[in-house]
Length: 480
Image 1 (cartoon, rainbow, N blue to C red):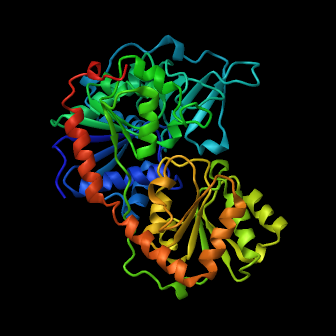
Image 2 (cartoon, rainbow, N blue to C red; image 1 turned 90 degrees about the vertical axis):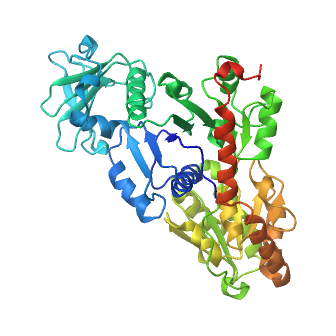
Image 3 (cartoon, rainbow, N blue to C red; image 1 turned 180 degrees about the horizontal axis):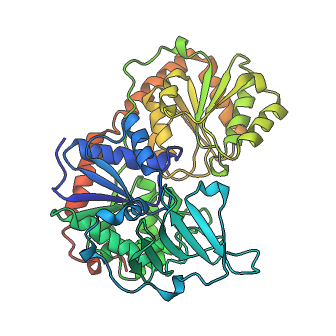
C-alpha cells in the first residue's frame, strides 16, 4: 500500500467507549490503517470522562491501537496540565462568573464516580449553578457554569476555569469554545508537519473548531448526521445552513454511493464530495463448512430502538416454524434487552434464542452462522453486514438507506422491502433448508466482501487528502 501525504493526521470525535458500535469501530480501523502505513494518528475527544488511559489499553488488546495511534482527551490533558508550558497559556483573570457565592451547597451524584460535583444556590431544589470536575485524587481541575438537563457540549459559551492540584487558578477561558480552540492549537503545535483533520463529530458547534485552530479538515458524514423525515432521504437540514455559509471544511467524505447521490441532489455540485467505503479486517483463517454452521442464525447489534432487533426476532420466529432446530444467537447489549427477552417469551421461542450480551469480538461469531439478520431503520454503511459476508454468513437485510444495497444483491444474499417480515422469513427458511443455495450465496458473499480492502480504502483517502489540499479556502467550494 502507498503512503498518504506526510501530514499530522488528527481524527476529531466527541467520545469513544468500548461498547460503541460500527461508527466508532470504523474510525478505529481507519486509524490503524493509517498508522500501519506510516501515518501516525491522534484521535481527539472532548468529553469529560477520564477513563481514556484504560480504554486505550482495551483497544490495544483488541488490536485496534497499534504503535502510532493515540487517544488525546481534553479533560485528561488539562487535569494534568502542570506539565504544560505556562507561558503558552491564556493568562487572563478568572471569570467572575465562576466565583461560587458564599452559602451555596455542594452535591455529588454517585453515577459520576467521584469525578464531578455540583453547587446549588441556597433554597434551590432543582437546578445546580456550577459544575466542578475532579482528578482521581479529588482535587478540582475545572469549574464551569452548569448546564442542567443538557449535554456537556451544549451552551458552549460558558466560561471555563482550570486549577492546579493545590486549587490555584491557572487558566481562564471566556467560553468552552475558546478552551477547545486553545487545546486544538496546542495539539497542532506539537508537530512541525501541516495538520490534516478528519472530523467524525456531528455537532455544528464543532465544525469550525479546527479551522479556527489553523488546520485543514474534512467532514466524514455518518448516518448519525441524517434523519428519516427529510425530503431528500435522510440528510439533516442543518447541512444546508452550514454549507450555504462559508464552509468550515475542505471536503465531505461519505461511505456509500447512494448517500452521495442524495447529497448531490440536495446540495448541488460534486466539488468536494468523496465516497470512501469502510473496509473489513476480520478475515477468517478458515471458513467452516456448511455442516459446521448447522442452522445457526446471528445478530450482532446494539440493542437500541433504531436497530429494530424486535423485527429480526419476528423474522426468525417465522422461519423457526419450519426449521425447528434453528437457533438465533444475539450478540450485543443495550436498553432494549429486557423488552426483547420478553418478546421472545411471548412468541414462544425462548428455547431457540440465546442472548449473549456484549461480545468484544462479536464479528468473529459470523463464521459460525449460516445466516445473519439486519433490520435497522437505516445504515450509514453497515459494517456488520460486510463482516458477515466476509465470514460466509448469508445476509438477509431490509433494504433501507444507505449501506445494504451497496453490498447485498440476489447473488450473495437477500434484500427485502422494509418491514416485510413475511418475505424476510421465507428468505431465511430457504437459506436454512437448502444447502445448495446456502453454499452458493455464502461463497458469493465472501467474494463480494473481498473488494472492501484496506488497500482500496487507503487509496481513496490519499485522493481525499491530495485533492482537498489543492483548495486553498472554503470559498472555492461551488455548491451554491
